Image (cartoon, rainbow, N blue to C red; front, side):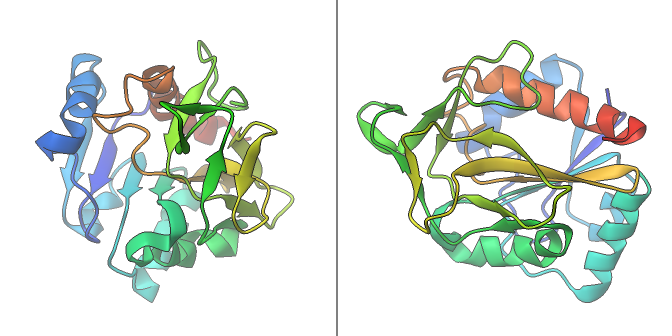
Length: 223
C-alpha cells in the first residue's frame, strides 16, 4: 500500500472535499485507512507516492510537466481522469502529460446500447477489467472517453464490451497505463466512476480500492 496519495486541486480539479460529488469516496478511503490529502500547491504534489488529477482544467506549464515526468521516473504513480468529448478541454490538458508516454485521451464518447445502467447507454458497464481486478466482476463508467494506445509499452486496464462503441472509431479502451521508469502513468476515461452516484454501483468500490492500493506497489517493483 502506498504511504500517501495527493488529490490535486492545483489545476482546477474537482476537489475530494466536494460533499455533493465525493463525500462517499472520501469517507470510504478514510475509513479504510488510506491517506489521501487534498493538495492545492503543485510543488507539494511531488512529495507524494501517488498523484490524482481528477478533471484538471488549467494547463500544466512546461516545468510542471517535466517535474511530474521526473517524479514518475523516480517511482510515483500519476492518475489522470478525464470525461467525454473533451469537456472543458480536460482531455487536452491531460494529453500534455499523457500523449508523450503513449496514452491519448480522445475527444470522443464511448456508449454501449446493450451493457449499461437504467437504459442509458452513456452509463457504460463492462466485465473486461484487465488490471486491478481482484474481487471485481464488472464496473460502471459513466460518460467515458476512449484512450488510444500509441506505445507498445502502454497497456489497457479496462476495455468496453464488444458492444461498446467509441464515436471516434477508436477501440473502446476506458482506462490504461504506461510503466515509466520506476513508476507509472494511469489514464482513466471518466472522472466520475468513483463519485457519489457511481461508487456503489457494480464493483466500482472494489476497483477503486485495488487501483489506489496496488498501483504504487507495482510501481515499486516494475511492470
